[in-house]
Image (cartoon, rainbow, N blue to C red):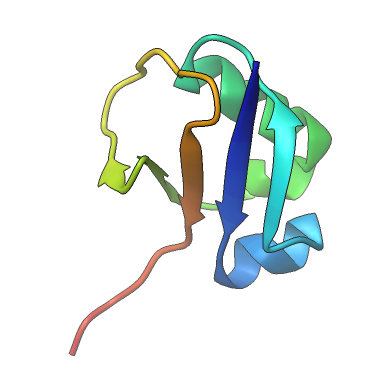
Length: 77
């Protein structure tokens, strides 16, 4: 199964990509493990994950060509 990854800010700097397609496991938790294996610096960051424009707070199932956004910490003002 393939998913589209969008990376922002510091995460894009770490991955050296803003957008890419990757083979993904079935769950968001497994995807995080895969990303943190591929990019160990992500383990040290606090970041949010959005699936199809909704921030998730618990692991969930992924679907073919889901859009996954990796969102660095942000603050408002």
